Length: 497
Image 1 (spheres, rainbow, N blue to C red):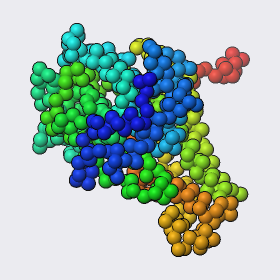
Image 2 (tube, one colour):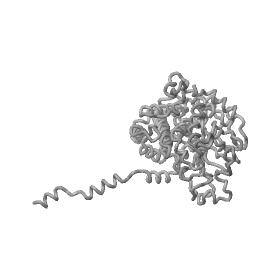
Image 3 (cartoon, rainbow, N blue to C red):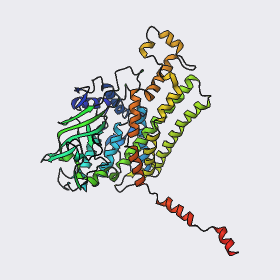
Image 4 (cartoon, rainbow, N blue to C red):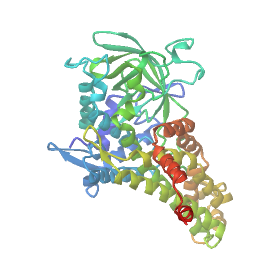
């Protein structure tokens, strides 16, 4: 099997550690460092799922005598899409939907890009037939490389927030934003930074073009696409302050397991070998890379599955709170839970519509329908913040008054058991549940999740603007004009009389 196990993933991280910096310290081994080891173990558990006897066929597929992670599978039918979607859901449920950049997200990207490799071959800088500089061939090989080794990828899209009023070339240093410095026989030298790489605890980083490159030229040093190992010389990840603070999983059930970390990426004259370059200098191709290969739709399909799993987790937690404290008979409580149900069913309906409306694209890939996915990508960020708010309203002060596991085992343990029990749960059961609700709605982990969901696919205003531009509104306009111009039959009869 090319689909790896958890121990294989951890061993690979130890042999080729990403260059991570946290709290001013270089992390030499992310599998053992207190700030990252729990996330490494969670990722290992995710890889182990595909070797569970009851999940092996759901999470892997056979091709050419090898079994690969199913998130790399090229869908040729709607049944294939359904199978891929179910695999996305199984993986998402592992983290209750709180692991935003699980490996299958980028797997969907490289699958679509690999199948749409001819798109990159259009680049003027590509040299068709050249062993290392044929960008289309490079992209195909990269997909196969990532698939055959079951690599974990991170990626980074946007430039640092220095001055949004100016273009990258107008900054005090033209290499604040990541740009090409020069070409060499071995490859291209790049310098600058990119934000934001989520899950930098990865094997490689895929740098695809930003979808909003604004340089006013046919060629730009800032238009590029490539993939390199996370321990490439000159490449560094400056991580944010950890959210996993080493507490017991009973006290921090999500933060202690799924702090996937975020980092900005520094490229200090990094050499990108020619065989790892997929796009260079072409602004138009850069701006349309995700749409031109339909990668955005396969990535969005994974995201919708993830958000369904997350919404189901909010629903399950909300109803568990209601059941524990016996508040389900009140209409205002029922109304709050019903809000979550409505959001869940909307997302499930959009996923089903995207799958049922799927068509084979020009690269021979069965591709989910764009309309429902665009609706989901705009709907969920606008409404997600209501989910943690509803947990807060349902749990009220109970989400604040939560003694820790150490408190329950301490001198006041008997009093905690007496006074903090619930009508239908022991104090221990109730506190475990409310700790989860707190980590979903009020902790630093929850705060990061709320901001993350708001900008997961980009600035909401740009997202709406992009939807406005791509959505075909003309049939609906034509219908209105036809209605207004339609002759009323009764008036015509009256005129004949």
